[in-house]
Length: 261
Ligand SMILES: NC(=O)c1ccc[n+]([C@@H]2O[C@H](COP(=O)([O-])OP(=O)(O)OC[C@H]3O[C@@H](n4cnc5c(N)ncnc54)[C@H](O)[C@@H]3O)[C@@H](O)[C@H]2O)c1
Image 1 (cartoon, protein in one colour):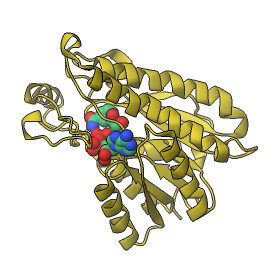
Image 2 (spheres, helix red, strand yellow):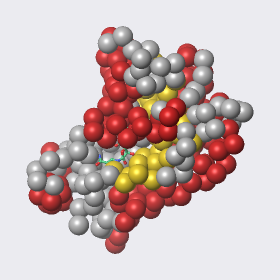
Image 3 (tube, rainbow, N blue to C red):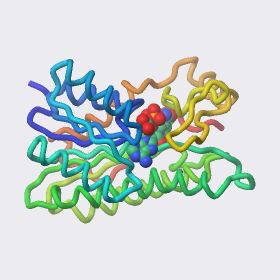
Image 4 (tube, protein in one colour):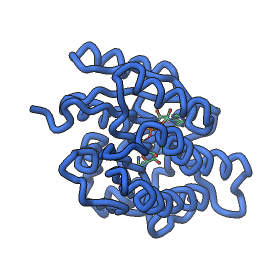
């Protein structure tokens, strides 16, 4: 028996990183999963690998900043698997800069993807979740930067702080449908967003991703050389996604391995 047998989940940004690890865990627990990513190649490849392992998986390429893409994503879950039980809003990125050097593009991208993208997906899921006795689960992804701030991340911290507030509103509004909405504020997780910037790749829009080596070293030192892996980050998401977590609503779970300062 899997913990998510007969459940259907949409996981945004699940082509790589924490989203991919969450999709792998959900499939292992019996969940049918719609993989989403703005990056077509990684979405298709992750879905293909999970299908090959025997999972019920499909993928839907789309950009969470676009409301039409979000509607299509939720419709894909319903059309392919007949329902939508769980929404995990993982699509996001950080484009860091100190306040006086931050560009409009960096501000807009970080806020649009994390904050507006999360809203777009929740609004698109309403059609399937605002149903008497639905008992659905929404898990939003914040960051310790959104809880207590981080130098160089004013855009990201504002967006991730907003996600915590938004989570509480959804919890209030949809409680009567049995839908819970919680969020998780991670510290540093070992993905392309936290690799040393010198060796880093780009977002789909060509923005440079990653952290200065010094920031990464500070966290590593504080936590005795151990860094949270995407697989570690997936476990609290599974907790909130399970039917048994029905009485936990509107919370923000804070992980260890907090900010860089
Ligand atoms: N890695 C960390 O230390 C850390 C810490 C706190 C919070 N987070 C959050 O966790 C989430 C996942 O991050 P990750 O570290 O796995 O990063 P990642 O870059 O490995 O994965 C994120 C995925 O989201 C996709 N994506 C980006 N913009 C998108 C869009 N507009 N529409 C759809 N997909 C999009 C990317 O293509 C990527 O595949 C993000 O919201 C991030 O802010 C990460």
